[in-house]
Image (cartoon, rainbow, N blue to C red; front, top):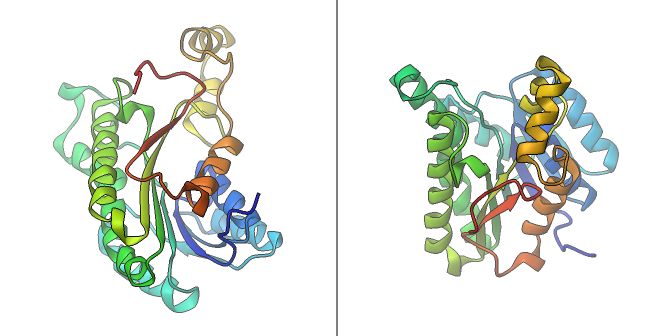
Length: 258
């Protein structure tokens, strides 16, 4: 299936490992040139080589996107050394606090929003003008099923819900410009170095199996490859009528019907 995105340039935040890396490899296999950012030099260099070995151009930048002051400089560096960005994947995310409302300090609540919402907001504002000029662009914001329904801690859940709302509003306002903007809401997807791998390693087999039985209808954790395939499809011309959507990829884990 030809997705008609060969030769496009993509920027993926948090693209050196986990779901971001899988998105990078999937897009690269479709002929998309890939720029990634992350916080660890060694991991970035390794992933850049893996992407380049597929046969596309790859570029890596060391940056912590939760520090939004570095984002204009990061975009300038990528534009000057790699090229203008046609596809933006706001994948970097996490949480600065794992507590409930009484255990979460205001500074940690704000910091989680910096990572999960404001980094993507700033990058969208920096990169969308180029997409407008060429009348083509794709933005995917990686949210979570816990941004759609109850789950996780208060700062993570609140910020992912805000990211979904940001996505919807931006998508509708730009729907006539050729730019498609969507969010993806993964469920419990296990990957190397991820939170669900840590969950498995830090708990007994009985606890892990109980969690799977109670929460995962497929009887196992998710895996990265379907996520990467979904990213590639949503970046393609075949997804031409999909914008403003929050697309769940969770093996039936969500309780919500919408």
